[in-house]
Image (cartoon, rainbow, N blue to C red; front, side):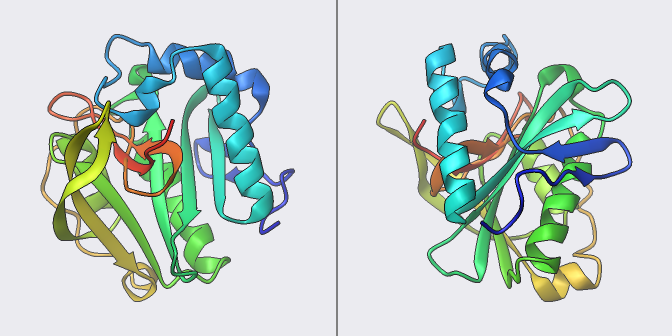
Amino acid sequence: MLVSTDRVLMTKRCALRYPRLADAPFILDVVTHPSFPRELPFAQLTTIQAIVGAINRRHMRWHSGTALSWCVDERASGCLVGMVSISREPDPNSWNLAFWVHPANWRQGFATEFGQEALRLAFGELGAQTVEAGVAIWNTASQGVIEKLGFAFQRENPDGYQIQGRPVRTREYSISVGHWAVGGLPPQKRPLERPVESLRNSHDDTVAVSGRAVPGIGQHDTKP
């Protein structure tokens, strides 16, 4: 196990903690929210049983060291505002970032805040050399969050992930430990709309999401 399940990561407004099965009803409320993008793999989890299965998979990946997923509570209210995950790529020195934020908490900077903490852990403690992220082409808000975190665009992927057998084109990003250590790349002048989640071709049910010109996401688990 890379990180203790008892450890809570703290930011100014957020507490990042190990997911609990008791979080399932909240997560179901998020993915069935009218504003949550239907084009995301995570949105395919539409029952409590499916959500519980996703949480159990996160527990297994945490203990195997292949992925770490946190539920994010707002410290002031104690309310769950989202999730963030980092998953190991085939290259052991590379990880993938994914996140989502409840639609009620979009446009409040949560994704950037807890995304920075996830990057700090990946680079500062896990020895990552690069962190990658993939965001659907339509998800301009998540692209803005990823760019604000210091990621640089690399390429477009015509088959970044699939929804009901249909390929979805994504924009692929990465950030190196060197860029992270000096504060990342200059923030892009892109308006951040509504944060929801993020995606990439990997092995988790989370996809980075942050809203879009409709709501958006950036991904890492395309198999709900």
